[in-house]
Image (tube, rainbow, N blue to C red; front, top):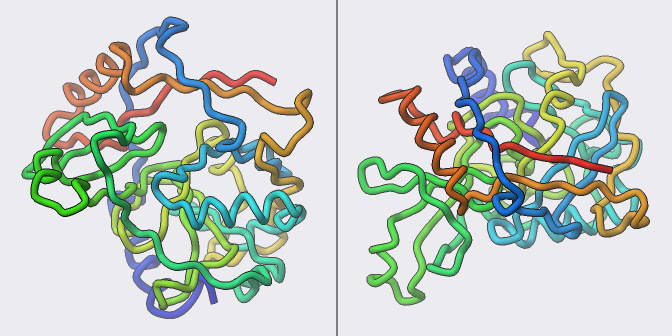
Length: 289
């Protein structure tokens, strides 16, 4: 089973009662951004998930998990996800789909994927730091919240790169798997709330940039296993570049390299103080089409 029974599910269900799972993180008020302070999401990195509850737009992160992003693009392009159920949804946790059987037992006909729990970052990686607690650095790679080793460590490594990994904030897209690390295939989940206990344990491949409200309105199960009776569906899933031009949405996200983002990040840190989390920063987004 993919992230639905066994030890993985047991640990998740224990965590579902934690403070992290019970409260949504407060966020800072976004400043008004000018035209030069927006970043356009490339069509090849925008996953368009139409559901029975509305549309969800996910920015893919090929720098973080190239193998998993390629699998998502492949399956979306072949219509594999169309009509599949959100078969496992836990209210203060996540919504899971991608199983053609709708039971937690199914997967695509392609081989399982090698885990991409972390990635290597160099000085050319488009990363913006927002905090540096105790020898680590927190920030963003495009829309994805990330933790990494400091740049100074690059001088000590053979490849001049440092370890980095995505963080399970609301909207982050992760790949479901069995207990074996290299067992992800086609099932994935979108976070409804922050869940740091998953960091570096499940591959992250993107983040919702529009439609988190849709993710949170998907029908959830009151049962401990999260299996939903009469669940919502994905009606169509495509990478934007695979849609006819007239049907492609245009998405612009506040550029994390811009001065306006720095204002937003500083406001979040001042508001939260010692309780600050990178999940407290919500990037402004413009969607047209």
